[in-house]
Image (cartoon, rainbow, N blue to C red; front, side, top):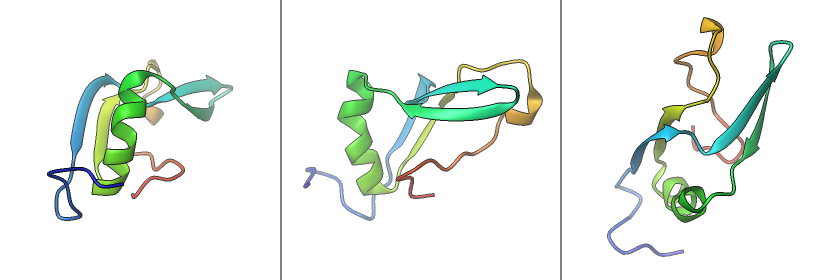
Length: 78
């Protein structure tokens, strides 16, 4: 897809209160499921094209092992 104003030299950084995945933790095992909301649907293709970064809260709390950790998800550019 072609997005006006964006090319491979630009990098989109999104900062929001949540990340684009629903995360669950059971017995300290974490699983990820992509959210289907409008913001994710609209911005995810642009984010991937620009090699962007999405910064937000996972929705989990109480275990510092999972706090402030960069997580690469399927389809993530790293």
